[in-house]
Length: 108
Length: 108
DNA sequence: CTTGATTTGTTCCACATAGTGGAATATCAT
DNA sequence: ATGATATTCCACTATGTGGAACAAATCAAG
Image 1 (spheres, rainbow over the protein chains, first blue to last red):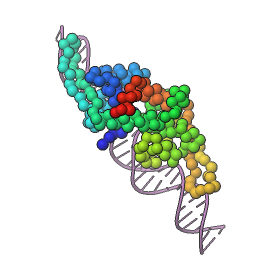
Image 2: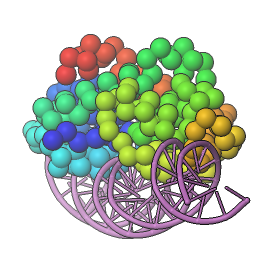
Image 3: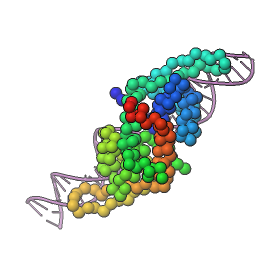
Image 4: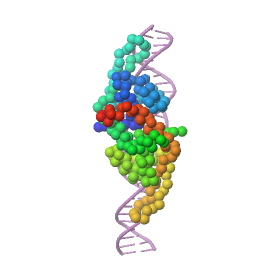
């Protein structure tokens, strides 16, 4: 079963892929903000990450406390096979729809 | 004001761009089904088109009855400036997020 | 020329899923 | 305790989805 990803779910999942082992709340948020230029609340990212986890698209593990700083432990996320399939489907849908239209879309 | 487009709203808006003057319920549905490989009910397309119209992303006009066939008149849709901006923003967000990752995403 | 069947197309409605942000809470170092 | 970092809770809005009903046109009888 491959869930259909929402617009924001796609962005979050891609951020997780990009960040690899360093994917957790703050870095995911920053990655999306920097790459899309859109502001987002940190809780939006967490809500979506939790839902992606419930659907089996990602898993997480709790990091060790790093001695150099205070603060709660990080919750790291990683892509799961089901998430990979969902992301592939979304990516193909988008590229299939936009194929040949790239220039026009950029020019809008 | 540029609305954030949902995942399906993006597909519908792109289909409208692709189809030009021939964009109406049935063709929009077919375009999305063929290009994404995903099945969709016709009413899903209409609901989304209506919402896009309310937001000012598209406009519509009612076609003349064509003599060669029965059936109700077609409701044709066309992109509006606000829809163009929304689509551009969505396109840039997606390409910005996926930049450099194309091969990996296809390979998933 | 009017009635009914057929075709094509759209609307209604109800519910499920996803998006969003403010405020509260937790955990770590010092 | 206090400050720093990080996550959860909660409430609400917006999108996604499809079944069923409805509307409007053509065509073929009678």
